[in-house]
Image (cartoon, rainbow, N blue to C red; front, side, top):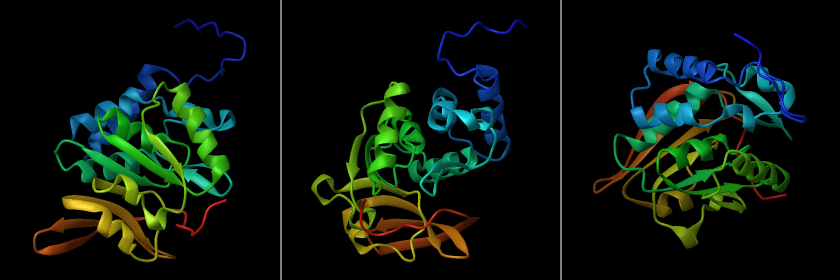
Length: 223
């Protein structure tokens, strides 16, 4: 197949093809991701737009990649798995994301039809997320510069909350901002981390420990 001609300034990667993205989605399916909305979103979002140009040839590998300032973009399987657990086969509704990062998880949530609010503590990273989401033509999320520990009370309650950094415990503010019947998926731990699912039921909070994971820590404050 002939190599496509690139316009000046266009990244010269061979990994941007639809075929490469389809292979990523097929790996996700083989690894147990079954929600077709999630798989379609993962297929539709151009992950190469959310990583640095020097790393773009690895954009569709199942690995996390650095995005600068000590932050990372999660591996595709983790993004798909957390999104699938959060949706639980239901309509996405209103979702709060803690840790915007480069905006990739935000983009996937938007593509599933969620109304997305996203908080990022690092202003320089939030600016990068805005640029990335504009490049992907996904500009409907409300992005907020703030401390994720406190959530976003003015927009609560949320049908789902997803955290992309590891907390030491479950922030009480997030529990209070979760809608009745809502779900929260988040990593908890320091050296040893696990995904936890928190469900707000009529009987109280139900907590389930899931997969071992490795995320950057959830830090306080904003800068």
